[in-house]
Image (cartoon, rainbow, N blue to C red; front, side, top):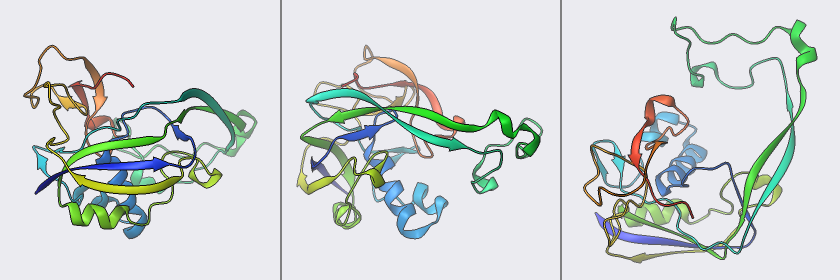
Length: 214
């Protein structure tokens, strides 16, 4: 396994719904785009892993601007997702679709996101650098609202580095790390956070040591 850093130069602002934008999350999304297999996307990330923790930092950047951007979406009274991907209720059953008699409760909704203007984004990681480079070779956009032109990637470069993607030079966490797995500075910031894919699943949240917010 190699230690390396990934640096992307950005051609347009990136839209984020929060979180730490970890490299393992980005690679998992790219694997899913290519395979359509959610299990492979969460298990075949070409990075070192320790007790379920991927050796991949959150995004590191210096922002030039930080703003809010809103988009309108339509909320419909039916499921558009594969029901197998939806969390089940306490009885172990999938939540059923909303009846059409409630249609009046649905319609256009406004969603707000964080829009960041950054010249570069850097990640630190440990893993199979050649496979990571292959996955990132054709990436054109990252983040939310990619189809709208946000998060355009101008260039990507991978270079050797000393950091493992988990702990920085001063013992600070480079990504969310559950308290029982963290070996660095025990005075670092702690928070309830998602720490492994699938990041949306409640089972993958824990009290973690986390990086300072950029």
